[in-house]
Length: 391
Image (cartoon, rainbow, N blue to C red; front, side, top):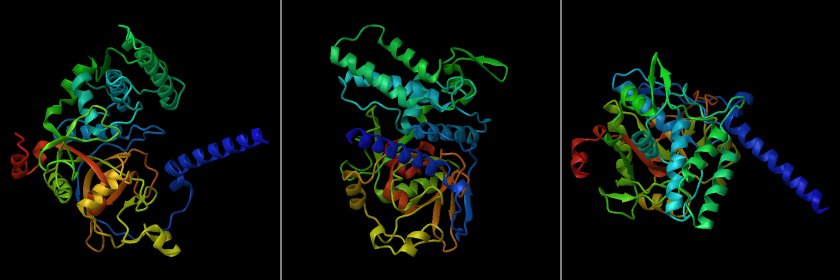
C-alpha cells in the first residue's frame, strides 16, 4: 500500500508540474479567454526587440536585462543584436560560485539573479550574440538547468565540506557547465568579422555599465542613499538607491517621456496578476470577498483599485508576500477608457497571451509589487540626480 501511495503521489506531482507549464505557456492558445473590454490608447511606445521565451528556467532577469540592453542600443542609434541571455546566466553562475565558496556555502545556488547582474557580467565578461551561443546543446530544445543545479550544488558543497579548494576548481565548474549548456566559443563571427565576448561587447553593443543605476524602495534604510538590498537573488550584495514608494512611478514616467526604457523586478504571484489576460492591478477586494462573477471578469474590464502606502508595501515584503520572483522590461505607457494609466511591459514567456507577450501594469501595482528598477542615470531628472549625488 505504501508503495502504491508513493506512486500515486508521484503521478499527481507530474500532472501538476505539466499543468503549470501548460498554463504558463499554452493556456491562452488552447482555451478561449473571455473577450476583453479594455480599450487602450497608446501614450508612449518606445522601440524594443522581439519578445523571447525563457522556457522552463529561472532566467527572466537575463532575458529582461538583455532586452533592456537591446533597447538601449536602439535608443543610441545602433542596430540592435539579439544578445545571448544564457551566456550572461552562465557567467553569473561562475561569479555566484565564487561568492558561495567565499561565504563557505552560505549562499543559495541557482540560475536566478537580479538585473544588475546583466550589467556586471557585461562589465567583467562581455557579451555574445544569441547566434554565437544559445546555451542549448545540439539535439536539445532548452538548457538543462535542473541537472546543472544538481551537479553544481553537489560539486560546490563537496568543496565546502572538504574545506579544500584546489587550484583547478573553476575549470572543473566550467566543464560541468559545458556538459549541460554547451561550450562557449573563444572567437565567433558576426557580420563577417571575428570577435571575442569582450570585443563584441565593447565594439558592437557599446554600452557602459557604469552609466546605469538601480533603484529600490524600503522603509528600513535612509531615503536617497544607497543600501545593500537583502533579497535572495542579490547574491553579489550590490547596492541600490532607496527612493520613497511614490517616486518609483515618477521615475518611470520621466524615463519614458525622455525616451528611456526601464527594466524592473516585480512580484507576479498575486491575485491581481494574469498572464493570459496580460493585466496586473491591485484589486479593491480580496479574492475571498469576490463573488464568482467578479473573479471570472476581473481581468476583462477596468477595475477599481485599492490604494497602497509605503508601510503596506514594506510589510508585504517583510512577510514574504512580495518577492523578487520575476523581471520585466517596461517600454511604454497607455491609458484605458476611464483614463487610468498602465505601463506596457515586455515579458519573456513567448507571445502566448492576450497582448502577444506584453503585460499592462497599473501604476498602483508597480508601486506595491515592484522590487527594483534599472535605468540609465540620464533618465532621471536633474533635481533627483543632485539629490542622489549622481554625476
